[in-house]
Length: 477
Image 1 (cartoon, helix red, strand yellow):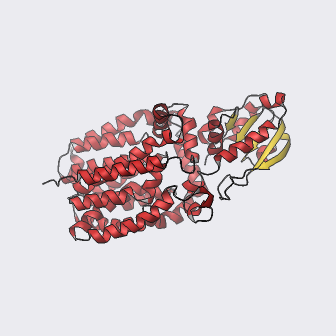
Image 2 (cartoon, rainbow, N blue to C red):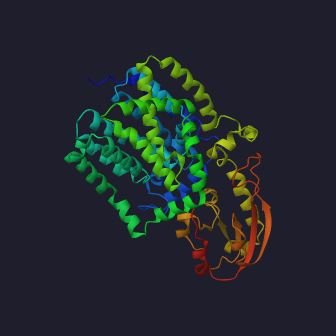
Image 3 (cartoon, rainbow, N blue to C red):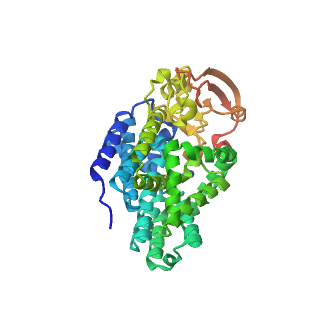
């Protein structure tokens, strides 16, 4: 018999989380990825070289509905993670979790460091987490209730998830291996399962057609990321599994793995986690790629904690973890004091959300120093999509970048033989007759992020037309 949903406390947790995230949206500033997504949202497409279209398009809807502000951009992220809280409670209930187990799951999800980061900023993981949770919920219904029609619902969610990230394939592959190794293998003969697989393929088809038609750019992007950061990601994978949502969440997740392993109906989902982890390690993928499965194990662990009357102990541990997670994942520390704390070293999102107004002011200062006639023809070329996005937000004209998708929005006009270059190395500067450094970026807070102390160059006399040189400016990272 299905357990009742603890709808009132779970709803309160989700609503409070949404309110807190929304209230803190202006803290620090835009993250570089948000600045990039804002630019991509101005160029609707079935896909981009580094990602599918869902996150930028949600950003576009947020801007249209709530205004072109940082809060407008972050309404849907806050709503998405509030929805994740509810979905995780439903997963706990599906695993025969009591009301206490559901509330514990909701609290742990709402206060997990990575969930707070994802709810505070517009990122692909922001929508990946609830999509994975919905898919896992439907898979559990199909496996535990022996109601095979839920395979179709899972297929629909998996198809939609491909428009956000293709990483949902890790869940599919992990489950397939789990079913083949541990069963129940009879479900592999179910027409409902294959109907769900077909539906997922049909929904994902336009996205996949885009990839085929453009030479699988995301594979090229993945290879570039693996080459650039693969070794670091492999080294960080295991320790980051322990702290991604907080150490207490990871400890409880261990008990969740044991619980799923002991239940033959869902043992395949327990196996899916190490399989997905192994695939991530082999490919040199990021440590957060298996975050959705880790949350599933946590929900299962909360069910075990409640069944063993360990709710209070788990709750105290999660409360202590929540305080640390909040400081890391939310802009609670005044930006003026941030550099004196370990948060910038721990949280890439925090440190890369600071200093964009100072960055754009420096570029504008250099641009204003150019004589008026020459200034009208001058271009700005950046090495990073965050820099491009910050300048676009500030309304700086004639800005270009060869980074990822932005390369396709070039080349600069041929009369742009005077260029302000930022985050461009000697090779790029060597294409001009002269380049002089016109200052360095200072975020004003002493935070050691990517832009801090970056030199800004004013270059004149482009030696060849931009149309001939532009292919060499393309880079992935």
